[in-house]
Image (cartoon, rainbow, N blue to C red):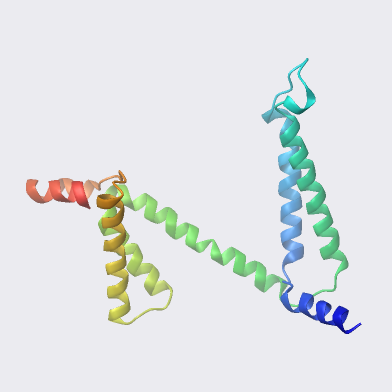
Length: 179
């Protein structure tokens, strides 16, 4: 009996209050994907069932809907835990970092890989709460190391910035090649 109580207390302790919101989102997305199956896949007459292009996506989406419905049912029948909307807000606020990445990807072709990487490394360090000059210096050093690693050692072809066009010829060539 004590083992059951221990498992229940562990379950309560590690259970998140926003699971019912997640369950609704998962169910709605899976139902939407299942509704698109006929338009997005084909059925070939005369082919074997398991070789049909629509068969395995249908199996996976039906499973996705079923398990999302079971998750929703389990969440709806379990006891309510305070903090559901705080957790949902945490999920939404984490999308901020996707916005940072989109802004970074937008800025690289104009400013260049090295300057935009340094700018965003320092900006994200500040956003994370680091204010000491030593920590911001480490952010700059990390950005330069990342750029050198990708451009010189890994030979990743990344777009050069339009800002490099205004540099003198010798410096421009170095920036285009290595930074």
